[in-house]
Image (cartoon, one colour):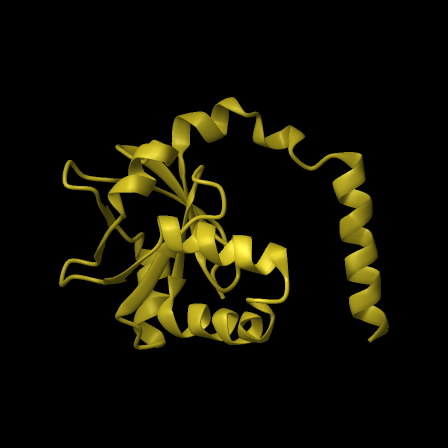
Length: 151
């Protein structure tokens, strides 16, 4: 499980060096292939390939029947590329995604349970992270947690 926030840098060639805490988890899972994509072009999602393939399997039955699923697959394919980690624990971020999400220097890498999320550090901090958890979102989260505890 990926959790926490780790500052990192994207080098001039567009490579992200994975923070050590996340690299240890990846090594423990013996993962070398990743799918890097985005749902909105504002951040990069780094999925260990087995986790991405699990997501694809859950969507395959709906891909031609559900417009939201079809759109999701189009967008994630547009931004997406399968990447192999190099010997120095670096991942090459897709160029189109680096441009749209401004992933060109200082970034923050968030653990999102089964994948990582990479955001432009300055833009994220400017958005005032403390205000992201609105009352509406807190109530929705409480509902999810309550439902989880009842099952």
